[in-house]
Each structure stands twice: as C-alpha cells, then as structure tokens.
Length: 64
Image (cartoon, rainbow, N blue to C red):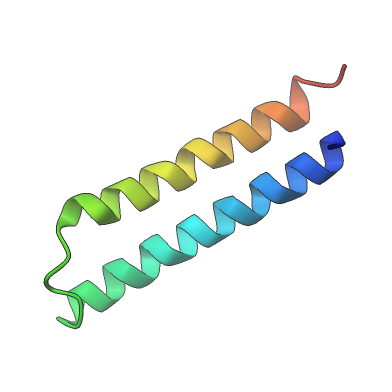
C-alpha cells in the first residue's frame, strides 16, 4: 500500500469515527440512544483523535 493510499484511508477512518462519535453524542442528547454509556462516545472520539494524529504523523514524518 502506498503512502498516499494509506493516508487517504486513515483520513477516511478519521472522518467516519468523528462523524459516528458526534452522531451518537447528539442522538444520546436527544434521548434516542440513552441506553448507550458515555464511555462509548469517548472511545469513538478518542479513536478519531488517535487516527487523526497517526494520519498527520504518517503524512509529515514518514516520507521514506
């Protein structure tokens, strides 16, 4: 897998995780997903942050 393909995939995963985290947070706020624990939201958002950092590091530092 080339670097641009890997970076594109990491960016897509970042967007999906961030979108899911925000969607779950909003739906839980409306009471539709009130059975979901808050830890799930934190895992989605922290996973998105981790993948975003990994994507940035891969794009800037791993140019070999």
